[in-house]
Length: 201
Image (spheres, rainbow, N blue to C red):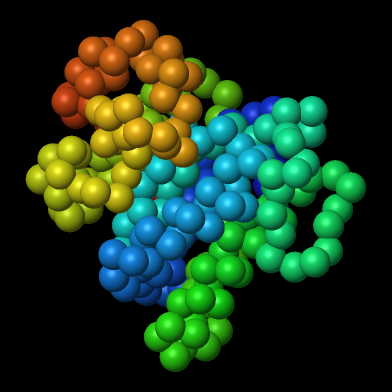
């Protein structure tokens, strides 16, 4: 299968699951640590619009920054090797490798934790972007892990209801929906997930 090359200046749905659909998060501290690593490796090279961490998979909606938008001194690597040009795929690999090493050490396991390669889908439609944000936030409800979107703690949905610093580009997302009220109303209605069939773990 040909792997889609990540192109800076575009929006992507980044998602993946554990090998054979197995768990990738075993306790609350795992979710927190994964987000810390995401902030370390991915936040400097992307703008994040939505995320969701489930027990055996994850979803992120990101804009890949172009070279001129990236502050080089913010970049972190899992090895000592640095590249003259930013490689977004490599940054994601740093995230997944660092997390896998930590989990393997903590739980005395070996081998890869995630399926390879990680999944990615380029997005060019504004309507698709809005529907994808809903799909990501609604994932716990879709998988019957939560009854309502707001009750699940490991998505970016709650970030829009407080003033705390966040990974999310709140202003950009709310402008996409028009305003906060429309954002909230959109999430209270059911929307088709047909465009996302085949993305499930």
